Length: 103
Image (cartoon, rainbow, N blue to C red):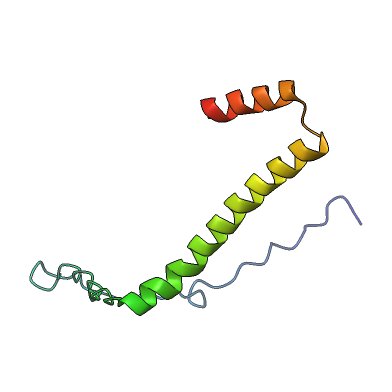
């Protein structure tokens, strides 16, 4: 190109073709009369406890007591057996008795 040649002007779009962006939708602010307090939380219905008869009490607790008595008897017989077989010497028996007494 020649040094004296003129460059074409940069492209400019006509001002009429560029439209402004649309306005956001109008939402009026609520008046104090329209603002309602939040609803109160619904309380759960209160259920009355079921009245248990002696049959239900016996059925629910009887096996618990039977198991506890069985465990206690097993512990007594285990200690008695270990003493008879010589697994627990008199010194060990005294120490275990003292520990059991402190507990």
